[in-house]
Length: 172
Image (cartoon, rainbow, N blue to C red; front, side, top):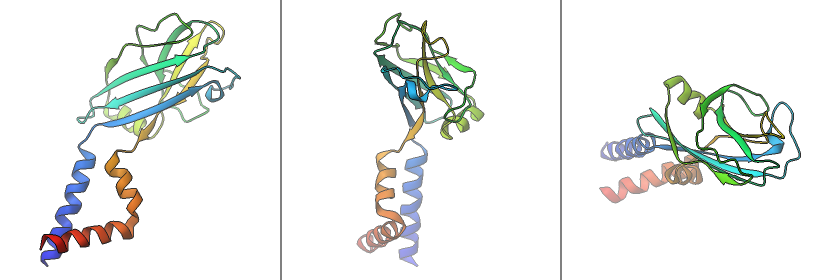
């Protein structure tokens, strides 16, 4: 009985730690991901969106290089699966009129339904310019697993159970 309590306590502690932390989402932007028509642009970009632990705000960072013309706008669009277009949800400000650059870090309020869409991979970053007014490069935002999640995935179900049992024995 004592072992079961220890195992249950460890399981709750692991899951609580994972669920209470902020979440990070990343995107790699390329012309091949543009929708509805991919393009052969050699430009690339990267973006990071961090969802706070309370799930009420996102912080956005984005940079790019090699656009065919100076950037005119950048946004987070959604909800849309890869290959599907959607409207602008979060217009990014301070976009430099340059072929390579980055935006200043920005914070936006996010609704519970938008959090669900973000977590389901339905938001994307897009950089627009005069040659590609619909967007030259695009990248779908995907969740970056936290280190503790990677550890759990690496253990697998059997390894996790073995680890918990071993910890329970050590705690007794």
